[in-house]
Image (cartoon, rainbow, N blue to C red; front, side, top):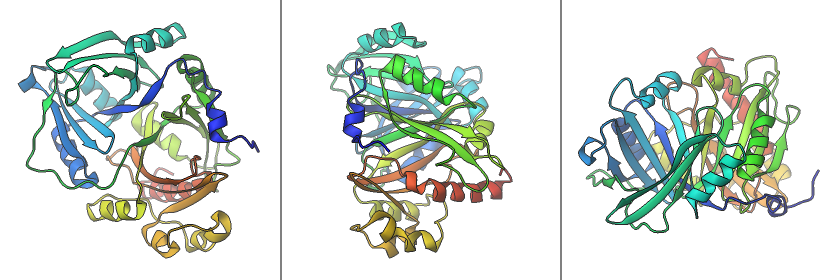
Length: 376
């Protein structure tokens, strides 16, 4: 086992592409107005900005929501022949754009495309009375896109072309702070290729690897590698299926998403007990809790923690540790009818890992849900 810290591993990234964090995540959905209401009601997001016919946009409507440093953009097509509508028809509601906040969007495009990145959007400068935003974009796995957003000369609410979205309905937040990481599912034998793409095109480094011997249950298995940029602000774990007795959650995702894409979005909180209680009260559904033995073994497995184990057990929250501390995490059920995208709520108390010790418990919970759907 490597004795290097995560900081030492991350320092090996080429880092020719400075990234300051996640700028926004854009979903293509069938009905953005209703989806926005769901994320406000269930997850505590606030109205931020809007673009559509009223702002001069003729082919789509986009609602921007914010909580902490998280921005979600929910976009729907206004005509059936739209590429947005085609995306939703094929994949269902899902993540189209993982936008990254950069110092120089033009340089980011040049550096990544010369290293093999496939262009999605040539560099462009958008302006309004609040200044300018420069942006560009490239494709990553599947139809997913990394947009590069440079906004150092902009003081507006979101982007040029959007107006402030003022609403009388703004539920209180649920304590969600920022995007911790976003996980992508790729097809059979595609993980190493995708990892190499992140290394070569984005300058990322592989900081963690798990094979099917580490991530498995009686029925299924997967392999996973975690990619990070040089400052650790952008982390993208990549999963691929592995051979098992039955269909894994990764295979189920690929079948129902009909391709590669974002499996889950991990959002951070500083008080997971309060956040999860709040989300449950608002109707967010979480995966079933692991068996009692999981919590009985917790003191021996993770050592002393600040939280009461009885409370964690009641809520179904998982705990894992590494050399630098521990973390608490819990996973929602899929947030759409297709068993594809879900969310992770995570609180880090020193740990920089991704809950490897919880993979078995997590996968068993996922398999129970798969079995109910008849997809195991």
